Amino acid sequence: MTEQFSFRAGDIFAIILYFVGIIGVGVWTTKKIKVSEDFFIGGRSMPGWAVGISLLGTAISSVTFLAYPGTAFAGNWSRLLPGLMLPIAAFAGIIFFVVFYRRSGFVSAYEYFEKRFGVWGRSYASFVYVLFAIYRVGTVLFLLALPLRVLTGWNLPSIIVVVGILVTLYTLMGGLEAVIWTDVVQTILLVLGGLFTVAIIFSKVDGGMFGVLKYAADAGKFKVTTSWNFDLTRDTFWMFTITGIIGNIQEFSTDQIKIQRYLAPSTDKEAKRATLVVGLGCIPVWALFMFVGTCIWVFYQHHIGLLPAGLRADEVYPHFILTQLPEGLGGFVIAAVMAAAMSTIDSGMNAGATVVTVDWYKKFFVKDRDDKHYLTMGRVFTLFLGGLGIFAAYELSLMNTKTFLDLAFFFGAVFSAGLGGFFLLGFFFKRANSQGAKIGVAAGVIMILWLTASNLATFNISDQALDKLKSAGLSENIIIKLSSFKDQEIRGKGEFINKLEDTIGKKETDAYKSLIMKESLKASLLPFSLDSSIHPFVINVFGNLTVLLVGLFASLFWPAPSEESLRKATWWTRNDKLHPESAY
Image (cartoon, rainbow, N blue to C red; front, side):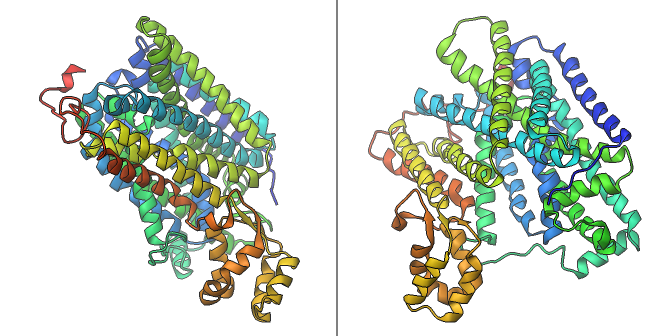
């Protein structure tokens, strides 16, 4: 069930005020854009605290505002666990990557790959990143449109086009500086929206804050528990830890959004401070929105009749906003929902335009024009990427949610492209060379495609399958339990095995899973024997590790790079004294 609400005049005014404000920031920053570096990296003069808040806003996104409350409402705080790994990656960024990129003089992260492995490395890394940037802008824009449709009653294409044009407009005008300052405003709105929600609930529940805390604690809503078994097919502590660390390190080492933020502050100290802000700030913000979901659960436990039957967990917060928050404040919180997504969209748009301009247009097509020309083209490519993002979001709106999730999973896995392993191969291992890296990248892509295809397999236990399983000797008790799968279509071999274990027990699953899966397989891109049962979240981990390990091993068959060619290209061969900050 999806509920639709009517806006109140005060809510509409709050939303209009928000849009006027962010466009005003774009107009203000436009006047400060003089050269291309102003547009791409804020003129290397942004304050560290603002850059840090911008990074924070980009990291938390609309997933924080909607998915986290929904998760906490339906269960406990166990989904906070992957986020606890981000500070580790942030500290790795401070130690290894921030100063390195600032000394390099690069504007694009992918200039590094040419320095280390040649033009092919830069072309590969920048190409897959641009595809990822379009995918990210389109996906987040589409996900933003879903709750706004519930809240406003407008159709998805209208929301996508309006919001997409507005984000493109202020990003086009002010470049990275506009992105950073609007992200600051949007992040503050995001946090205030959560705090206002909590305060309202405290005022509406008997016992106030202490009543809410006690009721939720007694119900086990604050637990952050998961399995400690080393199992990469389930939501275990180790699965969350490994994917959280490696995924975040990939972002802090190769994501153009992060690298532009490293370069934007005026000093190394400010750049490190910015990275520290996102490393330490994400967890309290994520925890806040987990707490929002918990508080909403307590509220509806005390006011059971106010929650319509059939609402999904991720629809409960939007329902609460426009039925329980005062007029005007509800619109303010809706603006915060939009802000959460827009901070991710604008960052992806600006980063993608930077890469297209620096790594492709200037590198391969128009090499010797003046700086003003590249500034103009940066704006043109921002407009172009904004249009592609709107188109991608629109195409997603034409699909059903199930199809979208399949595609989002597929593209997210493929566009990760093993870039983290590729970067670390060159950054930490002097023995790595271009020939070995090519083999490592090829192996990593194959690994990612294989694991992705495995997780796109679907299973369904039909009546015909149950009859065959019964004829094969499975007990009546197991057949009865398996009949609960009849109306379900389960995607991924690992997920199917997990559900089997939960339904018929681990012992029976180990004994009969091959037979059950063979009879239940509905569709697969691979022969059954080649399907993997790995958790989807771990695909990026295996892709990165494959690139790193295979690339390092293959490099042994070719001569090691010369020390001169490695100068400024690895962690071990950097030399801050030879390349002072003032040189850039």
